[in-house]
Length: 70
Image (cartoon, rainbow, N blue to C red; front, side, top):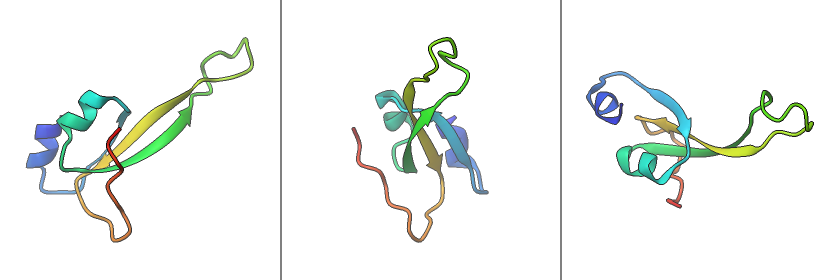
């Protein structure tokens, strides 16, 4: 997927689980780190686990900064 995005001539945005392998595969792109609470999990207990999510883009926004690597 990272190679495909590198070849794309247009803008691409990907949302994917935060994992060290993802950081390595998409090195050089711009990252936004988000905490996501999936509402369809743990409904019996009334709470959902918070997980890390990365939004990866292949262009530079004027206020966008690369997130620090974990």
